Length: 139
Image (cartoon, rainbow, N blue to C red; front, side):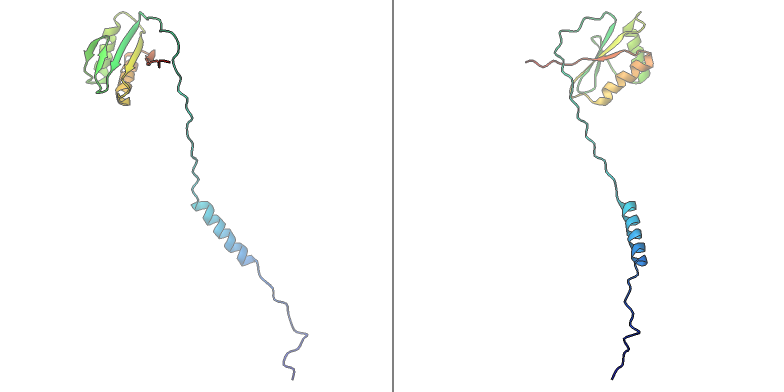
């Protein structure tokens, strides 16, 4: 008994179009949900001061900021109440100098905000020359 005929036998065929559609959807999903993180670290080498003592400037205002945020302008203690009042104190300390050099000596433990206040007041007073003092390391 022959139930099947050999002439009508067809080869099975795999349809790749649905497979490609599914893979494209997965690829799009992965591209959209992937987070790209660029980790960048600053490689900073701070400068060292090995030079001799800086020359004395006659047109200079010395401002000291201690660790608690107290200010001293040319050896006179000043309380910071506002940017405008501190700028007026800077102008008073400058006297006849039109554009003195503002020299900021900040304690290592002083907050950044304390130093920024001095810089803002100097800008408000119209002074653009600002210098920072450093402590040299002994070799």
